[in-house]
Image 1 (cartoon, rainbow, N blue to C red):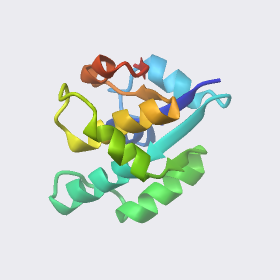
Image 2 (image 1 turned 135 degrees about the vertical axis):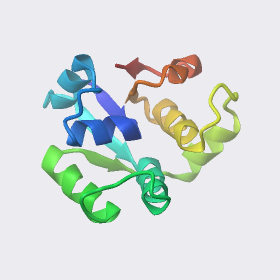
Image 3 (image 1 turned 60 degrees about the horizontal axis):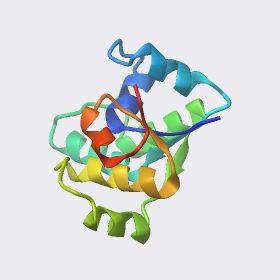
Image 4 (image 1 turned 180 degrees about the vertical axis):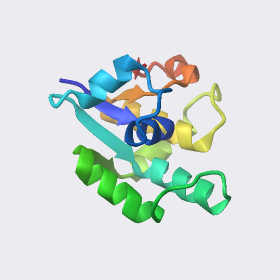
Length: 129
């Protein structure tokens, strides 16, 4: 059993059945023995991208995410003060604030990040792709 934190693009590629999602990642997400999480940080990122016109969703973001979490059996991972405080101590291998928060959450909660982003591994988090 693995505890998986889906990067924002991984979540979107999974729900959209995108060919960019690697078969290793697909198998891990589909495995009912694994627990899959979507961070509130990813929801925030999607909301910003929708508002900027950089992302189109079939429904308003909150409804889209809620429906997809239910349909896929994913859990929502809240952001708490410990996660934010961990970001303060991370080196700047990665500059994206959303990804830095995901890294902090993965470290604090002992989660494996499912992501195509190679920079994550520089932080000592488990990355699956």
